[in-house]
Picture (cartoon, rainbow, N blue to C red):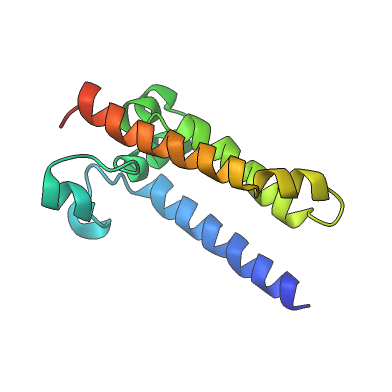
Length: 126
């Protein structure tokens, strides 16, 4: 029962967030959406900079816009979905769950995120 309630809350929150990001464009709505503290303080983009605008583009089917704002989402969205699936099905897919939560997998994800962080500031500075 508790797992069902938590799952329902997560699904409702995700649908509500998707509705907000579909309706409002973070690039045009001023102070409605939070600003990146890292870029404000340093002038450099963090790995997540542009994600809100990219999600808005994704929900409108604008894949080029999504790529422009944060290309890492092409890797992040399927990865997040795979982790969600593995977590929800960990009893029946224990090998997948263990592989995704291994030290090796976590280190690979960390290296990819740090590489993205560095490369985007070299090749796509603000």
